[in-house]
Every structure is written in structure tokens, then in C-alpha cells.
Amino acid sequence: MLTVINGDILYPKSDVLVCPCNLCGILNKNYSAKIVQSGGNLYKNIKKNINNNNFKIGDCFITEAYQFKRRSVKRVYNIILSKYPNDFIQIKNMTLCLDNVLKKALKNNIESIAIPPLGIENLEYNFIAINMLKICKNYKKVMNIKIISDDPKFINVMEKYTIVEENNRIRKSEKNIK
Image (cartoon, helix red, strand yellow):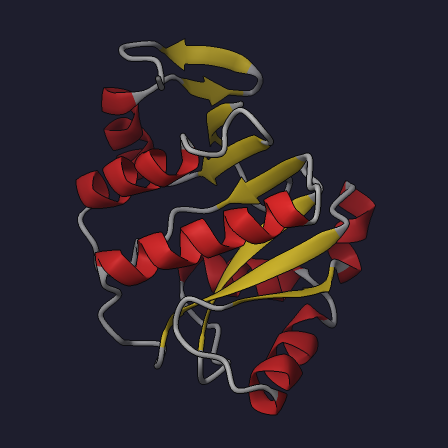
């Protein structure tokens, strides 16, 4: 199942929460900052993992859920979107990360995963929406995928392509994800 939700990524009601990262471990932008600021020791663990491993763009690594355990999140899947925090995020890197994180979730028998908009710092919302939906639809029959955003511009763009839920009710339905 694939659902787009107008809501807060910090309350995902999912087994896994996806956190966008960079190779520097500086998580001070948009959803990354929001997630690590609410995650207790999550930031220290992410930073330690990045410093102790030879990750590259597109990689995904798993950390404890820390404070998100209170919200039923079992693990945080961290994806490397860029080298530096202010790098231009390329569509190919965003789609590679998304595909890799969903493959890892599938391999680990994850039932539900919450994903914020990826690349929202510098990519056009239409590109993000189209590419995220294209990758996610390949996995929607095997896990519950939730794309969650509280950004009104992103939600408005997503409404062009799919159904958007708000507080567990359908807000608008133009096209269903096939």
C-alpha cells in the first residue's frame, strides 16, 4: 500500500522512519534536522556510523529508533543523499537512495515505512513527486509505504498525482497510484 499523508513526519505510525543524511553527518536541513532534533541520541549514532564507515551516496544504514520508540518506530533507516549538507541533490541520487532503502526494508521484512520528501532542499517538487511515486509503486504490494509531509506546496503537487490523506481521511482524489 502506498499512502501520501499531509502530516508530521515525527509521528509516522510505522515500523521504520527514513532519515535523509549526508556524508559529513551534518543534519541541519529540513526533515533531517527535524528528525534528529526529536530523536534523542539518534544524531550521535548517525554521526558515529558515518565517521566509522566508508559510506557512499545511495547507501542506507540502520540505527536504533531512540526517542521514536515511544511512537512505535522500531528502527531508523538513514540514507546518504549527498556528500555535503549544501550539495545540490541529483534526481539519480534521490531515486537510488529511495530504491536502496525500500530494498533493505523488503529484505528485513518491514511491514511499514515512513519517508519524508527527499531532495526538497533544491529539487522541483514535481520531480520529487513523480520520481518518489515511480520508485514506491514497485514496492507498494509488499509493504505499507507512507510519504509524509507537512509542506503545503509538496502536498499540493502530490495531489496532482495521487490521493492525499489528512488525519486518516482522504483530502482529494484525482488519480490513484497504479
